Image 1 (spheres, rainbow, N blue to C red):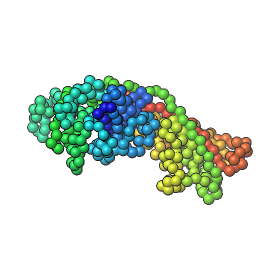
Image 2 (spheres, rainbow, N blue to C red):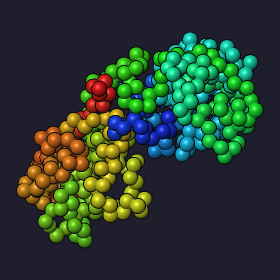
Image 3 (cartoon, rainbow, N blue to C red):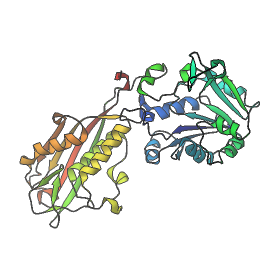
Image 4 (cartoon, helix red, strand yellow):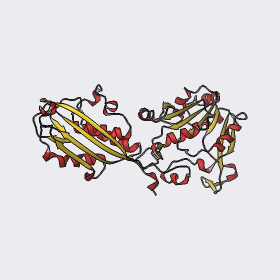
Length: 374
């Protein structure tokens, strides 16, 4: 059994990345960046445990990709690391950022070789430019650019983080607590992805897969004489609506399931359970908007959707064009990419008996191609 654990920090909001997507969800071939990084570390077979720290809302989806231990992060990097440390039971701990995507095994070996000599070992790069601090030129030979991963003695790091002071890396906390820090030469390929332009500095990153991801959705709702009808995001001028926990827009519910299906993100009931009072009577357009934001945050692009509404009543022919417009606006795609069809069931079944409406939807997604940026 290895005496070394790995913590990968991926709980950031990507506020400086400014692409409408969380950088940890950029696709490298078909893998999200966080999985690409974790799998590369796992291949070295050096770690007793790999812990990935992420935002709480991301964790259920991340579990669909890999079997690592996922821990909810905090408001800061240090808080996220503190949360992870509760699950570390090995004497040594390697900490890295998922945004540090191209750490090679040679760098890892250099770090591990030094652990017996220091409380924390860090990779660094020399400075080649002139350094000025508050109008004073500093001797650049005394300045280092510190990278991750950083290897620490677990008990020393836990002790160092028992403070209200915030540190930007593990070694700074350990040194402030009286521990020792050793240096090994880092690697330019271990450059951290902070801004969009950083992506072009890393040769290890493959282009996203060009696969088309398809999903389907199906939903039905019975009629309710006490409610108003909303269908496809449009108010229908009839004196009845749908029996449902939300506003009952069966077309948007089917569409949500199709989008989630294409992304492998479960179903509408998982995200918006009908036993949660916060969703009681909610406008289904708001639910769809939340799903679309999540899809784009997770690196998906919506290609097109095709919706089939089966109803003996009401007649919706006059509403189809407005449905397309409303849905296209929410999905951030052209109206020509939204198709709405209407049919009856020739008076067969519960739909034919005019007891409710059923809707089938197909949706197609692709991965955001970050290689096309810049």
